[in-house]
Amino acid sequence: MDDDSSSQTGSTASATRAAKAKKKVKVESTNSKPKDHLNIVFIGHVDAGKSTIGGHIMYLTGMVEKRTLEKYEREAKEKNRESWYLSWALDTNLEERDKGKTVEVGRAYFETESKHFTILDAPGHKSFVPNMINGASQADVAVLVISARRGEFETGFERGGQTREHAMLVKTAGVKHLIVVVNKMDDPTVEWDESRYEEIKEKLTPYLKKCGFNPKQDIFYLPVSGLTGVNLKDTPKDICPWYSGV
Image (cartoon, helix red, strand yellow):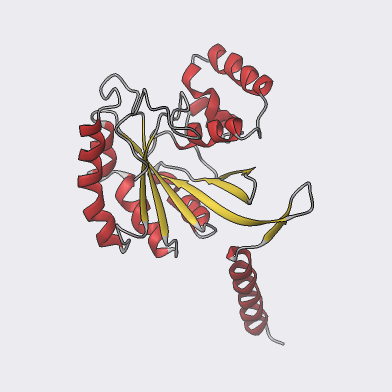
């Protein structure tokens, strides 16, 4: 067999393996009952809070111990990066921690009673779009993280921001369902204001529809605070009484 034929055969085999990897598989849990497996990629503009949310989810689901987070918090404080400690559960290399910027696709997992979820934390910076595409190609569901902070949403969504590009890329990669997490709702410029949440939905939904997502079937919106953990697992009615889960 010549080199070209070998190359083609290798490419076909790689493509077949990639296709099989994307299919849902059964994961054995500790009690030997199979669980459905879903890959979730976190995407969005740089500094929207993707790694922080991922790290906090891991803590809330028991995948990261409190002692470990306290260690990260001490180390982050020493580097004057107090608000970054949750992201360190996913941003593990020194470059990412020093710059507060995800470079590679972070990978972690958490479980519920019936499902095993793999988190793929994609880079938000435009310099690392190829790495983001690699994460998106493995995903069953995408979580588009939006910053509700005044000015940050606008920066990410306007031309030059990564919000638009990431939404288009995950759709092109074959992701059918999108969870839009409106983060930083606790920011002083927002303070859980329902009108800000609705403003972001009204501006974002038409664009997502242009990307090919069906707003009624494919998109789910969720207001959260990744730093404090509000609405990541439980919905406290005293903080966000206007959110009904739709």
